[in-house]
Length: 81
Image (cartoon, rainbow, N blue to C red; front, side, top):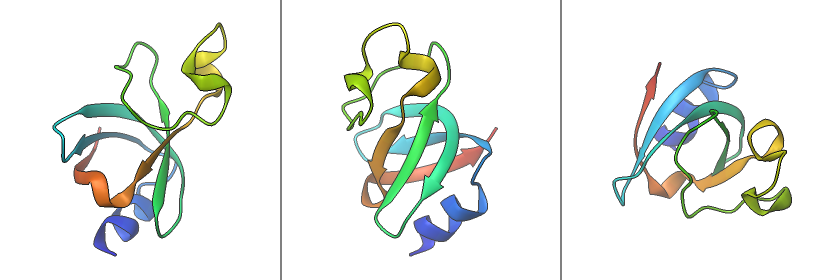
């Protein structure tokens, strides 16, 4: 639950997330629930193996509209930037 409350506190803020598989993801937290954090990746950020609910992460609207859904259990660290 600690990851949930940390993400909730950082909602609508730009963060850098480190996952258990050592991937760094930078973006803005747009929502959080007890299982997932929903992150809008920053332009030019690395793509990760995560679920892209809108458009599969491809095409001209990728940066502006897509949200990465990450399980809270995969988060190793989160930092405000």
